[in-house]
Image (cartoon, rainbow, N blue to C red; front, side):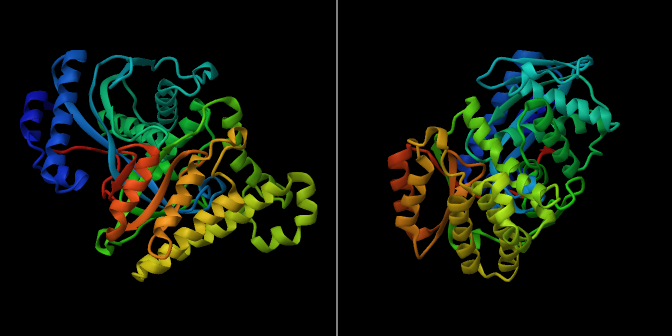
Length: 429
């Protein structure tokens, strides 16, 4: 814990090794980030008063390989990125958690009331409540705290703002009340559990793990209670390509669209169930193909196509990791494109059939192919049905690519990112 004035003095110009690791070497960006932290400290002081506080940062994540594979216990390739959520937090000696996020009204969570309340689904408070309930169940200490949060992980961007928020709250509780003894992977598991049970969204575990652990990692969810996380030593910067995430907008929060999203894991699991399994990781492509005549009578054809996508993308992750470890970047790029086509044709999460006249992702992928075919790679990013696309863009086409996409989706819609080594952490300045 440190006094706010001391932290402001240490942050000052952002010329601290940790800031450069989080945000890169650009002095203008570092100064902007320093100003951002100092403003949040001032906001905390005006909202909750003076005293000793801690600073926290939790990154967004980019899904590099494995689209909709995690919820069926598959493999993924993911990385933490340089867009993050930050927090100033301190214990308040009560049973109340008070959180003020920039641009939103404060919400509170009473730690004596931790039962699931479906009327609170899809609220930030429900996530905090769920995280506290699970940590308490697992034997960790919880307590009241005050926090001011400022987010740079855009909502609906496919960079996982909700997962970043979840593991940020987990990191705060872990550091303030448990001396940091909870592992990054357990923080992720608890965040996912809260999102599934208290928030009401049937997400997989990839987002939380990538945000919590940090770096470029591959995760194998064959045993979801103990996912195997492996760090990949590969320098994307050295390739001369930029990783560009474009926010194409779209997506809907109405019940019909939520059901469309939920159908992805549900339909995949329905195919597995017809083969006597719980998830697709427990069956083979050969088993699925041999039993298509019987399966399709029960599940329909789309479920089988989604199962086909799962089997292909799950193996593709292992092949992508092998290519990166051998420094075979061209093979890796080829598999990025393969994954994108598989998501479009088989997984069918590119546009929402309920709002089929809105095909923002399809259009963005068409424009990407027009510019990058033969030189780069492009694919859907994240959950789909709107949100974002991902591209690996050679430097000689970077301006053309961003100008073309931003002409359609708006200035600032393209984000040039890099992989950040640290996940959700307390800042030791």
